Image (cartoon, rainbow, N blue to C red; front, top):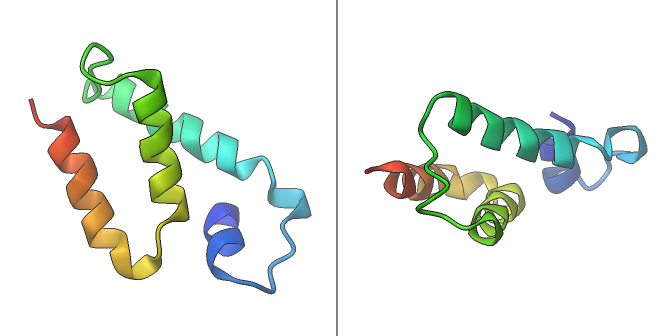
Length: 76
């Protein structure tokens, strides 16, 4: 929630939630690895970082587009 608020709510005081970006990115990658959906031989760490940042910086109206992008990248 802190990450979403920070990105989409200009009045949000994010000082106490600064770690959420790193935690959210870690959780995203951990979940994909744990579910065996992420093959690190097919994506570089740099590309994974760029994808995570793209999702974090995306607008709410682009949610379905971001989901589609991730799903396309995860298909084998």
